[in-house]
Image (cartoon, rainbow, N blue to C red; front, side, top):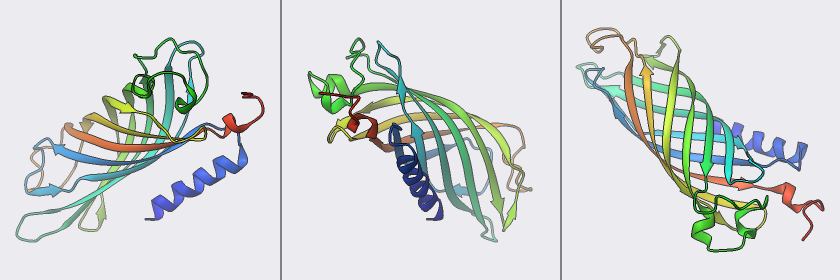
Length: 218
């Protein structure tokens, strides 16, 4: 919960310090599919919360949303002595939205304000890549923290509430190709890098306070 409060404070600070900012907050549920590199460990699905900043190409509907997020999950060993296992990760992501059905629309305005069909102007492909700084804890002992890669792709659709707020549900497949977990034996099979696959169900709430200013005259 403390991480949710931190993100809320960051959003408030961004809004009140710079009303021309174009930003969003995100909440995600990630279904984890673990590579079988750990014996006798079950991990729950993850929750992730993030904050992003929005900008776009001038004449094409390719939009960029660099994001900082925090992911957390927990689990336990299924050995004779059940021990709690926790995982947390600070992620730096570059999300790219490609509106291929509305690609040549050069209107720098919220989806709600664009002319045309709501589906074609709001549906988009998502490509995402980035780094995670992650770590496990086992039996109340923190293990080494490491860097890992994140590669993801999926789809989303913008639902314009008004000129200020847009809600975007999205679905992504996330591939994490370089995760290491240095648990002690007999839990660990080996200590080399492994893969975690995640199905990401999320929602973004985007804010365009810049569109409320006089420079966007009607």
